[in-house]
Image 1 (cartoon, rainbow, N blue to C red):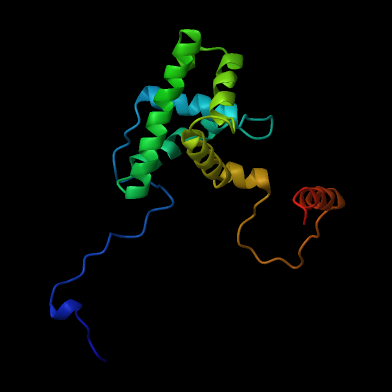
Image 2: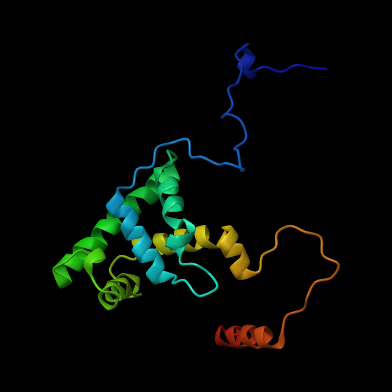
Length: 182
């Protein structure tokens, strides 16, 4: 059997470590969001994706930890997301103070929704924060056990048959395709 070395050296290649422990996971880097930023993530998440009687709000299922782990990661893309998220959280608070004289967390729900409606509007000057926040929120929520249950995802399991699309769902799809001219 032929042996290969890197660029003719005898150096051993160092890997990134062992596989993660998925039973009792832990983040190998320190979390960097402040308590105030974590509270803002919780409040914004619950307004954008409110809980129901059947499915908890994002803050109740751990979305804040997901955000903090993600933006604290030492990787380039996550650090770019961190810049967008932390600047956006500061902007939300500043906008609340500018419009209502109090931080976002001190506002009542209708005023909080008004701020969210403004930053989420297609006519907003810069939607980068809301777009990134919403993407992370939905990705974190719907890839959790709670989210899998909400969308009926049962995982990679063998099926004896594939259920067909219901007439109601087919009607919705057909309507959307018509709107798109397809």
